Structure formats: structure tokens, C-alpha cells
Amino acid sequence: MPAMMNIANTRVALLAAVLLATPFAAAPTFATAQALPTPPATEDIGSWTMACTVDRMTDRSSCVLRLKQWADPPGEHSPGLALEIQDRGGRLVPVVTARELTLEGAGRGLLALTGAAQLRFPPNPFYEMPCGLEGRTLSCAPRRADAERAERELAAAATALVRITGTGGGSAEPVELRLSGTAQAMARYRQFTPPSPAQDDAPGISGREAMDRLRQLFGR
Image (cartoon, rainbow, N blue to C red):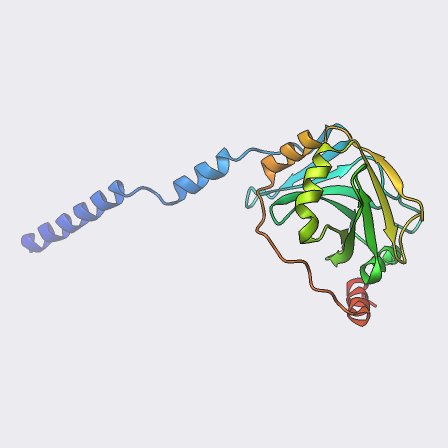
């Protein structure tokens, strides 16, 4: 019996030594999460405003960088169209958006059928950004072929001309937007938004498919 107890005590001692010598796997993850910068709730940078939220469960931040001036102001039953800077395939590009569409503002959603945003940074020529639905957000973003140009011209531009074409758009005349501090705003946004992987352009959908998506989105 004493021999068996000695063997058991020896095994316990060996197990304790192994546990004490083994680092906890969670420690590096916690340190890495703590080392990440915490974004501000809101910050004005030139003509831009950056608003960020942090998921307290994952410590991941999500930021929206938008121009203070509306591309098309909100109406009584129509959400406004804003010029934002977003990461698309690793590049920071201009995107025209109408966020959190509701049933009353579904007219903006019609832009997802045939709409596009024409964008120009004078004196450079304009290009078109096709529109689509991303959840409850209407987004008009550059095609992949125009992404590098869009990022480069955006950072250096003093003004932007925006015109929305298609049902649910704004005025036939382009809207002139004043830009300032754009390069600094892009660098600040990049601190909290790591580059996303490159993606192909979203495949086109038929008008019937788009209408079905709108009905599903607004519960009709």
C-alpha cells in the first residue's frame, strides 16, 4: 500500500510540474487584443467625420467615414445619400450610400435595379459606380478596374462632382462637394480598418431578382 501511494504521489507531482511549466494559451490572445488601438467614438478630420463602435465581446472596431456635406440631402420620406470612404478589396475608395433603408424610403432602393453614381474628381474624367443592396444599405461603389484610380484621385482631390442616375436618384445636375483633410482621414480610418481581401465585382442580377430582394427586405 505505501508503495502504491508513493507512485500516486509521484504522478501527481509530475502532473503539477507539467502544468506549471506550460504557459496558458489564452495569455497571448488577451495581450494582442489589449494592444490594438481603441478608436474614438466620433472624430472630425477636415470635411470628414469618422464614427466608430467597438464590439465588447470581440474587441473588433467598426468605423464609418463619411463626408459632412450630403451628396443628396434626406427628404421627408427619403434617406440622404452620403459620400463615404470604405475599404473595398484592400483599397480605400469613395462609395455613395443610403444607410438603413426603411419601407418609407424604399424609393432609394430602386437605384439597386438600374441606378449608378457618376463621380468625378476634377480635372480627371468621371467614372460610373454601379449601385446595389448590401443588407439595408444602398451602396454605389467603384468597379474593381477603377479602384486604384479612385483611391489615388480621392486622396488628392479638393472637390468631387456626384450625380445619381436612375429611378430614386437626385438632381440631374451634379452636386459639387468640397473636400479637405482627405488623405489624413484615410490614414486615420486605416488605423482601425485592416485591408480586406481583393474581390471580384458583384455579379449582375435581373430586374425581377432585384425586385424580389426588395420585397424580402421590406417584408412585402
